[in-house]
Length: 402
Image (cartoon, rainbow, N blue to C red; front, side, top):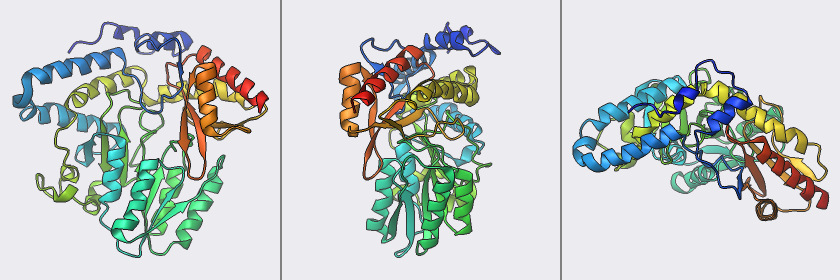
């Protein structure tokens, strides 16, 4: 399929200034005027060439049907996508398993982890994604293990994070499995993953890494990070069609993840028997390379990291000075990301989220971190300073009313 005609605007070596990013924004659907969307953490919009590729894929599959899907689809689309995803995270293609979401990817790793016996301990934190916390608690019901929550309060420093995980590992009886979020979904904090994985190895603990909010937003190298198991999605920071994720399992550790319901379509040494998907997200798989191409044309993860950090700092630096408003995310670029959690004195999270929407037309999201909820705002590379000015003004008013 030829490139979308607007792609030549993204020339190699172009200065990535505000004018350039405005050109990029022109390649995305125009958002509704009435609402400022600052909830880009759920999923990101497809750029015009990605949407075109997706629509073409739907048309093509609807015409070609089973002869295509049961034939060349696996070799010309699935295998090639696995190769590109492997290169993106510094893995090998045979270590990549396609899934329908990041949640499904993590559920494969958690619920099919083979090395647990009654009396073992699994560890997770209140900042992990709710569905992954549920899966870790489920292990207690099905495997007879002790499922232990590591309680992390916000805001929190890297030193405190490491200290709390270290204490939990020391106190646990026969600790075997640890869930970590590379970027916490509630407040966008980057955990000190390398240090925590090294600490876990000292205690003989395997780590499953949730990288749903990392891929495409922050640097990611599974070899350098010494990761054995990780789950990803493609619809947050890579802008692929919703309904597509993947699992990474280091080849030498594949035996620790059981086949999916005894799947026998592939041999035990083939990662593809770890999920019997049935009907795959065919059109999303076919369009995903267009999303990866567009990601590269923008400058890849480094360009997105810089852009998102600039946008976050634009509003966070001003909100940090407002009375009655509390930031619950790191302010520095090394530890923070596009996702920022905050609170207003005297307002619960639901009331704050609704006030921002109903009074000021700013859409955010309420996120749970165990005993309490927070409000999270998430920018995209196409977010404008005008939109962020509206958020800052709204929080200024709400904070003064507290």
